[in-house]
Length: 426
RNA sequence: GGACAGGUGGCAGAGUGGUCGAAUGCAGCGGUCUUGAAAACCGCCGAGGGUGCAAGCUCUCCGUGGGUUCGAAUCCCACCCUGUCCGCCA
Image (cartoon, rainbow, N blue to C red; front, top):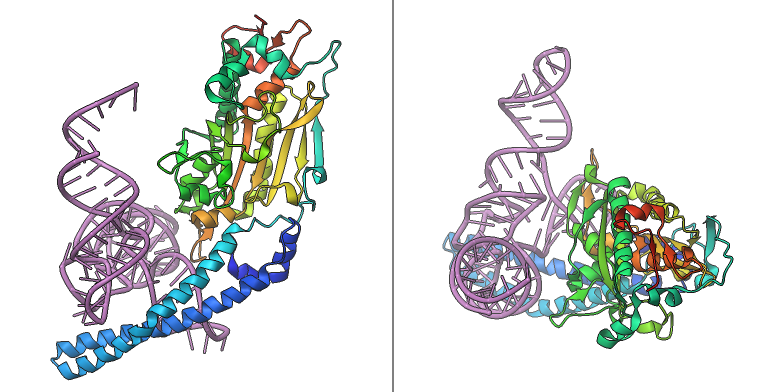
């Protein structure tokens, strides 16, 4: 949700920032609506002021028993009221139109975000770790997995494609990964552990910018709620409609939850294996930040996600997304891409975004600045995966595979594996 | 699912047709006092919008949306939510 005041003052900056994302100029149209809306408001409010004044006078006239004066005033108000509904409706229509356009526009990319249309224009920032050299033929996780308890057919029977059934040691390893990451983020990186709802209302989804545009990407329950596509929705909405004390910032939250995505637009993409599922687990990070510190929080959060990959000794690269590849709510996004030797490619395992005040405006999340400054300011919100559990499992399987079909357990996960040191084929 | 009670400013909590954007308390801010602090005392203190260079003027908001009325926090209707009890249930 954009600030119409900002657009009023910087229409060209606004258009050129959106142009970076491939959006056609809209400020002229918006400002015309804005002007119309304000003119209608002023006219309407003049009418309301007169009505209020007259109504008060009626009370006073009746109070002193001047029935004639009261009757005259009542007639005046009645006439006034005749034309007000029409004005009201016009004003509402224009304001609604303005709101709808503003609500559908994506966030403005920050100045240091590279231009570009899609992932080909993303910029590599840094590369960490050297891909392991294998002295045998490397396999993909979808080849290694079935002998180790990763069952796709079992799941397909009951749920269809894009679901997996994890059995025995494989289920255990996934749990270990989730537990380890949640422990790190909460105990070491300072994010408060949360267990939020998985079903949320329209407003919550609108607040983080998924609605109205991305309804088809989500699952909806029969009573109209949405299954969260990411815990970002539940965690970020924990401050909706609030005026926070400045000293409470930053608020850093984390949660390990299932995520549900319909993957409507991705038919045929990543159909093999665990990469793209309707249901997957993820450790999410969310920071509610002071606007002056969101950039440094963004770096900090990215570091928190990277620390997991480093501890697991999984090679990765950090990408700065170009304007066209970012999510609608983001102003700047880093992707972490883990090395998958089986696919011979880097694949996204985390996405960390600074949303500025975009979500805060939609959720009405503010804070009261300390000191003499009056009023309130919108907070900044950030979110990132720290990390996606399913894709981490994929990375472990592929990077730690052995020639005999077994998979070694990364040392930091050993305390979570109940004595198991490797996954062995059945 | 059934019955009842409620939803008011950062929080607590008055207010049942006009003088109510709303008593009071707490918290917060400014000041007096004090070596400093506390206490005490004095003052300020909801949010969003329109208009204006500004001071100011003005509009909207008492869960949401409708309605009654010259006038609604207050009356009516619908919906949403919260609490308590009962039923059911992991």
